Every structure is written in C-alpha cells, then in structure tokens.
Amino acid sequence: MGTIFNIQKFCTSDGPGIRTTVFLKGCPLKCAWCHNPESQSVKTEISYNKDRCLNCGKCVARCPNQCHRIECGVHRYARSDCKACQTCVHPTCPAMEAYGYEITPEAIIADVMKDAAFYQNSGGGLTLSGGEPLAQPEFCLSILKLAKEHGLHICMETCGFAKTELLVEVAQYVDLFLFDYKETESQKHKTFTGVDNALILQNLRFLNSIGKSMILRCPIIPGFNDTEMHFDGIAQIANELKCIQRVELEPYHDFGLVKYKRLGRRVGKMKDVEAPSKERVDEILSIIRQKTDTEVRLA
Image 1 (cartoon, rainbow, N blue to C red):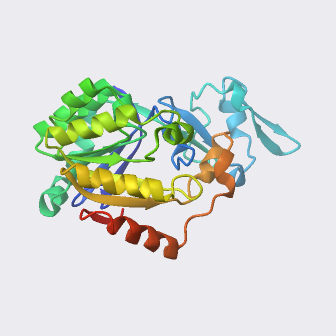
Image 2 (tube, one colour):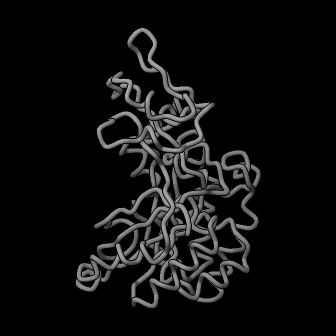
C-alpha cells in the first residue's frame, strides 16, 4: 500500500508511445519552481479553491474537527485544524479537493492494464512519476515488479536523490529513466532545491555504467539556472554519458502557482518569474546543440 495523487491515461510525453503515468506522492527535494506542490508531501492534503466555493455550509456539518464555518454568509476554512479526513471532499462540492489517496500496487496495475492494447500498438507502457517515486521505495518496487510480470515497458522519472543501493534494485525493472538535471553548480543546486547534487551525479553515472537508457530532463528557470555555466554542464554530461538518448528542455511555466494558494502555502520567489519567450527558448536550444552531438529538444 502506498500513496499516489493521480493516474493519468493516454500520456504521450512521459516516454515512448501511449502511456499511463502514475504519480506517487512525496519528494526529498523542494525545488523553488516546483509546479506540483501537491506532490511534495507523502501525506494526503486538502486543496481549497475559494473562487469555486458556493458558501452552502454543507462542509460545516460534515467536518468532525470544526475546520469549516460560515460567517456572514461567507465560508471560512481553518486549515491549521484540518486532519485531512476528507469528509469535506464531496462530489457536489466544487471547492474542496483531496490530493493523495492510498492504493495497492495490484489495484494500480489492474487499472494500467485496462489500456494494454494501446501500449502494444504504440510501444508504450507505464511511467512512474511524482513527486519522486523512490521516496516510497517499497511501494515503488512492488509496482515495478508487478508491471514487469505483466510485460509492460517501464519508464521512471526521477530526481536521482536516493541511495544508490536502491537504484541498483530498481534498475532491474526500468527500461528507460527520465532523469532530472536541475543545476550544474552544487551550491546553487542546494539553494534552489534544498540538497546538493553530489549524490544525484553519482547515481546518474551509476545508471550509465550499467547501460541503462536515459533521457536527461532539464528544467530551464529564468533567473535561476538559465546560465551559460549550466548550459555547458548539460552538454558536458550529455557528451560524457553515452547512455543518454537525448536531452529534453522543460521551460518554466506558471501553471502550478495557483495550487500553492489552494494548499495554503506561500508562492515565494516564483511569484514574479515569467516564462521564457519562444525566442529565448530557441536561443537556449541552439546554445546547447552547439556543444553536444546528443539530440536536444523540448520535452
């Protein structure tokens, strides 16, 4: 049993072919630009969309912890008292949503296998994402083993921050790693994500040493890692590690900012960051392409 926050069908950007992507909750990194803040904690979280609230008061009666009240006809939500019991989350309520639910590996694979015909015809399969799948190691491994027993092609998106011993075990079942590469300089990596990149680089090189296919996924964040030094670092890694099939750039977007407010969190440094223009993205693609023979494209 483990905790996920979404199963997304018919994905075409999380590996080859048509895929089902399973998003596990929990991540050891706290990237300043994270666009899925609901993925960071392994615990179930409640999202409150004030703009969609009907002020009907039904949640007041449902909640055993008195987190909801109606004052002068307006709904108030005391998040600090919330135990995430989910009694306020109801099909008729457009404002309250739960991120995260427990599920067994068997139930996940049963759902994934409903679309087996699409995987066979397209060369697709299962992708584990997050959060960070390795943040729930036993749950992750159980899913992988079952998926391989069912003959599925498996991709895993990972930030690479996990014990190498765990990767040794996981790598037996993963056909393609979508490996995040966020920042070249170690101290900047720690500033931006909360951890340095020594272990991440160690694991990246380990996967290369055992011949595992990888796609290097590189978020590009204006004012953070859109620097010549980082572009050089991306190219150097691509040139050094021959198991990297290609480099995929992921330009920053602000689609996730609204989630912070709904989860009761501060947006922080990202509130004034703008997505890079098409011209800037094309420029970055050109810069990196000039430094490596490895394919470089947008994710």
